[in-house]
Image (cartoon, rainbow, N blue to C red; front, side, top):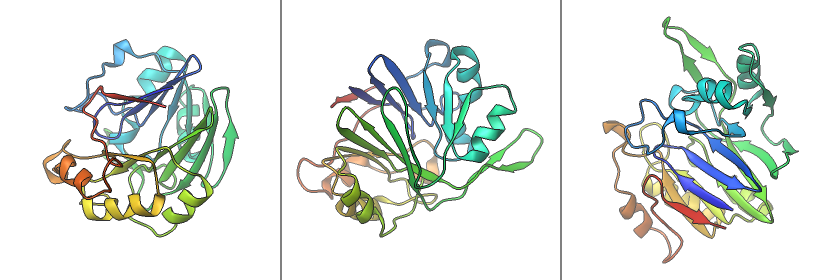
Length: 226
């Protein structure tokens, strides 16, 4: 299984002949190495409804026929646009042909801004656990620090965690380092930083807050194999 990071909160998982994209914010993401025209995902997982996480979901799903997995509100929104969707909620899990998806809580807002200056509520923000071939990946989505991260780590031993460090909108580096401690993940990768001036951070400084060998900075396009 190959897991790669592509700037902001974009993560790609390639396993069992399937490609899963998480929060595919590509156009408008100055840090990504990806191009919409070159992607054909089988699944798109959306953690919440903000534009920098919904991203290019509609264009990608129309092109590839990908199944969009997200909150019931996100699933309904894209279903009404004629796309394939699967709605799930916090605490629920489902077995797909590549592995199991389970959504967790995340403490964050979730509204999609339209070109007509409207905000559409797209359900609660969520983190996501992927269990594939005996390995567990945790993408925290956008979130503040919360104590139940310890419970998540105890219930689902995590091999690889993606945690936001940007501050302002999410956890900052100090809180994210404490989150890593609560989760007990084997490897922790920082995400959601440097895309905009207000979330400027040094990911290497964050990694230095973690026990030796736990943290790993992935430049856009870099990958980890599990």
